[in-house]
Image 1 (tube, rainbow, N blue to C red):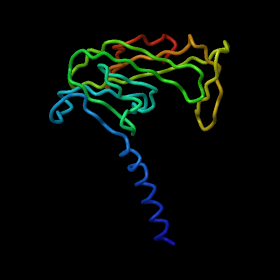
Image 2: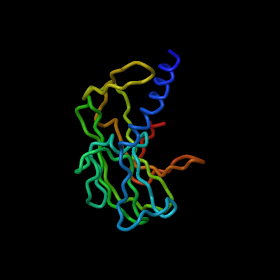
Image 3: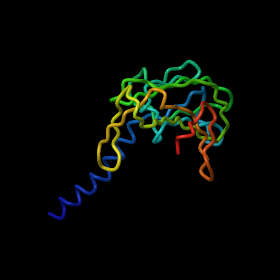
Image 4: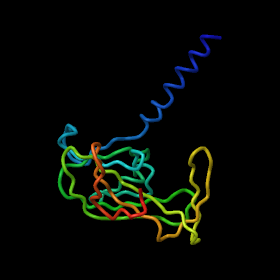
Length: 169
């Protein structure tokens, strides 16, 4: 019986590692892999790009992945990059997207963000799992936004593409 519990415990530890290993980390530059200090990293909300509906960097489609699979992050060389992206919650009837030019800096991480403001104006419904329960919010198309932030682990993140609404915490 003790051996069986140990097997289940080890399986519980290994399962998340298997799923984390399924997502790809890709480099959008030619040549050998460069150290993190020489490239910029693009990641999504909750550190996964595959939760996005679409993502194109410099005209190259990353999400949905044309080769199949999940994209967790992408690394680019420093400099200007044209980016188009969108999010769509599985139960929502609208897509929220953005585009712009990112001036990527070496050693920095850029995170795509999406947020919505529950409101009384009914244009669509969005289900959200929070705190152990599913809540249905009424969301106006005007009350959602998407933007890109430069992550700063020692202070507040800086918005580098798009506009973060005042109602976002």
